[in-house]
Amino acid sequence: MADRPSNRRMAPFGDADVEASAKQTMVNEVFAKVASKYDQMNDLMSFGLHRLWKDDLVAMLNVPRNARGFEVLDLAGGTGDIATRIAAAGGAGVRVTLGDISPAMLGEGRRRIIRERLLQRCRFAVTNAEALAFRGGSFDAVTIAFGIRNVTEIGRALGEARRVLKPGGRFLCLEFSRVDVPGVEALYDLYSRTTIPALGKIVTGDGQPYRYLVESIRRFPDAASFARKMEEAGFAQVSFRMLSAGVVAIHSGWRT
Ligand SMILES: C[S@@+](CC[C@H](N)C(=O)[O-])C[C@H]1O[C@@H](n2cnc3c(N)ncnc32)[C@H](O)[C@@H]1O
Image (cartoon, rainbow, N blue to C red; front, side, top):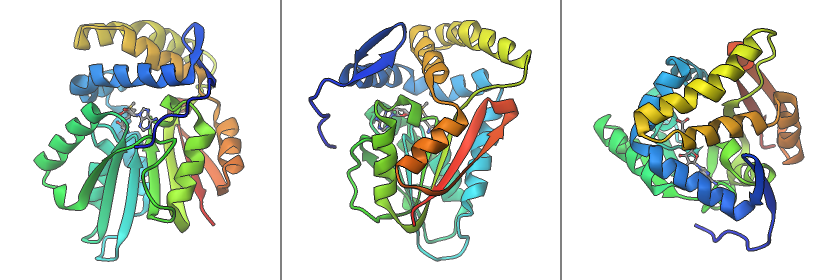
C-alpha cells in the first residue's frame, strides 16, 4: 500500500475541518471499531434494503456465467457483501479482488468468503482507493459500494479506479445520495441523525462512529455532481439510477 501524501490538504469532517490524513485515520478507526458488528448494523439501519441495492449493483454488472475470464476489483469491499455476490453470480472464470484499507474489515470479509466456500474465486488486498496497488488495465470491472464517500480525495480515487480498468471496462458505484421527496426528506434526516447513532450505541457500544457515517452521507455530493466528478476523472457514458426515493444511487461509467 502506498504511503499517504504528506501535503496538508484539508477535508471536511463533522463540525470542523481536519487535515486529510487525519480524516483517513478517523475513518480507519471507525471501521476497525465496527467491523465485527458491521453486517448486523447494515441490516438494522436499512431495514435490510442494502441487500436489494447490492443485488441491483451486481445485476447491472452482468457477470459472465461461463468460463470466460472476468476480473473484478471490489474497492472498499469491507466484509464482502459485493464480492460474495459477484463470485456466486459468475461462472468459473470470475475472479474478485476484495480491496480495502482496513485489515479488520478485510479479515471479516475473508472469514465470510471461506464460510461461503468462495475462496477459490476471491483474492484480498489491503489497499488505499486513492493509490491502488495494481497495474493499469488489470480489471474488467471495478465496483465500490458505500466506500467512495469515505475517501479523502474522491477525484483521485475515481482516477485510480479508471486507471486499473482495462479499456472497455466498467466502473459501478453504489452510494448514499439525496432524498428529494418532500416529507420523506425530513423524516429521513431525523431518522439518520437520531436513530442511527442510537442503534450504533446499542449494537456496538459506541454511537460516535455512526455519527461520522451519517455526517459523511450528508456531505457527499448529489447524484448529478458525482456524475460530473466521474466525467472529470475520464469516465465515458456516465449515467446513474436513483433507488428508494434517492436514499442511494448507482453510478456507472466506462473506460474507453
Ligand atoms: C461502509 S463500508 C462498505 C463496505 C462494503 N463495500 C459494503 O457495501 O458493505 C466502507 C469501507 O470503506 C473502507 N475504506 C475507507 N477508506 C478507504 C480508502 N481510502 N481506501 C480503501 N478502502 C477504504 C473501510 O475500511 C470500509 O471497509
